[in-house]
Amino acid sequence: MDTDTPDLDLIARARQGDLNAFNVLVERYQTGVYNLCLRMLGAPAPAEDAAQEAFISAYRSLDRFRGGSFRAWLFRIAANACYDELRRRKARPATSLDRSSDEDERPVEPPDTAPSMEERAANVELHRALQDALAQLPHEQRLAIVLCDVQGFDYAEIAETMRVSLGTVKSRISRARSRLRAILLEQRELLPGFIRQSGEEQ
Amino acid sequence: MSILDIFSRHPRRDISAHADGELAPDRRDALEAHVTGCERCHTELDELLAVRSALRDLPQVAAPRSFTLTPAMAEREPAPVASRTTPSFVAMRIAGAGFAAVLAVVVMLDAGGIVDDTGGRSSDESSTALFDAAPTNRDTATTDGSGEYGFDAAPEVSDGDIMGGLAGTPPVDDDSILPAIGGGVGGPYGSEDVLDGSEEYPTLDPFGVWQEPAGNTTNLDDGARPNDLDTGDDGQAAAPESGDGTPIALTAEDDGISSLLIIEIGLAAIAALAFGGSFVMRRRAQS
Image (cartoon, rainbow over all chains, first blue to last red; front, side):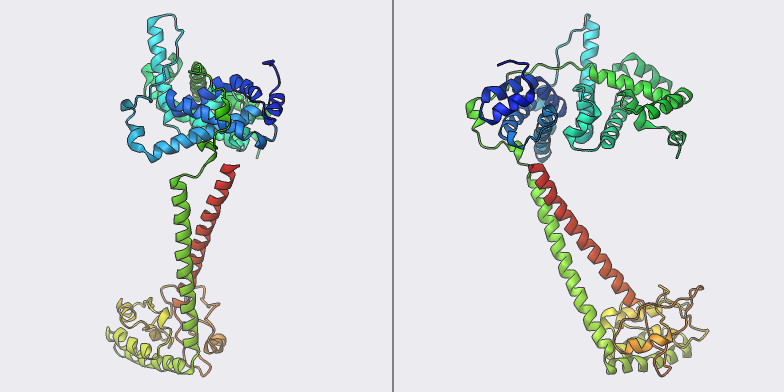
C-alpha cells in the first residue's frame, strides 16, 4: 500500500475492516503520538501504554470521525488517554510521587547530537529542566504548549484538537510560556544564554 | 476602543501569539510598535522566544516499538480511553445529587413553615394577641426603658403564637442589646416599643425594612405577608397601623425568611446545574 495515500482514503478502507490501511496511519503518526504522550506524562513506559491505547481506541472509534483533520482527531484521543493516566496517578499519589522507585518511570533522556561533551551535558540538563517544568503546568496548558511548540501545530489545529476557541488556545499557550519562563528563570544556569542574561538584568 | 488602547497595558497574550506568528496584521503592527517602545515587553518577547526555541529544540524521540494493531488488538474490548468515568467523577455526581436532595428538602420544609406562619398570622386571635401585646410592651418599655422590656414582651407575644416561626431576630434599638435577648428567649418580640412613633424609641430596626404603610395593614390582617416596606430616605419610616389605628408590629423576620428561601433556592439551582453539568461533561467525554 502506498505510504503517500491520503488519510481519508486510508480511513475509508479501515472503516471497511482493512486493518492494514489503518496500520499505515499508525506508522504515519506513531512518532508524533508517542512524543505527545511522552511530554504529557514525562516517562516512556506510560507514554508507550497511552499511545497504544490511543491507536486501539481510534481504530474502534473510526465511525465517529466526522472529517476535518485526522491528526487533530487522533491527537485528541491520545490527549484523552494521557488525561486518563494523569487521573489515575492522581488517584494513586503514593505511586506517582515515588517516581524513583518505579522502574517504569524512567526519566526522559532523548538522544543527543551535540558535538561536545559539555554541550551534550548542558542539553541533557536543559531537556530535563524543560520536562520538569512541563510537568508543573496544568494539564490543559501543558497540552496546548506541547501541541504548539513540540508538535508544531498551528493555533487552528490546536483549537480543533482541544475543541476550544482560538482565544482559549492563545490564552493557554501564553500562560504556559509565561509559567515556563518563570520556572526556568529559577534555574538560570541551565538556560540558553539569552534567557540567562535577561534574567540577570532584572 | 482603538487599537492603541488595546496596548495601553502590556499585551502578554499578544506577545506570545506574535512569537508564533498568529497575530492578525493590524494587531501585529500595533504590537511591534508597542514592543519597540516598551522595554518590558521587548524583554518578555525575547524570553518567550527563547522558551519557545528551547521547546522546539526538544528532540522527537523515536517510538520504542511499533504501535501497529494486531487483529487481536483490533477485536479487543473498548479501551479504557473511551471511558471517562472515574471514581472521583462518580463521587462528584453522587455528592452533587445528595446536596441537591438535601437542599430540596430544606427548601420544602421552609416553605411549609412560611405557610404555617402566615396562617397563624391571619387568625383573629393571633392578631388580637399581637395588638394587645404591643401596648403592653410599649408601656413597659416607655416606663423604664430597661432590661425588663425584652423579657416582659417576649412571653406575651409568644402566648399569642404570632409569627413564632419568624422570630429570632428582634429589632435593636438605641437602648441596648436587651431586645435581642428577649427575642432569643421567647421568640418575639420586643419590637413593639417602636410602634408608638415616640422619640424615645426609634422606628428603624436593624434592617430598616420593617415598617409598612398604614394603607397596607388590612392586607396584613388578611394573612398577607408585609411587602413593599416603606423606608424613608433617612432610614426612618412611618409606623404602620392597623385598621383601627393600632400600631402593628412588623419586623424584618419576614424579609429575612424570604432572603433565606431565595438563597436556598439559589443553592439548589447551583447544585442542579452542577449535577447537570457533570452529566453533560460525561456525555461529551464519551463522544
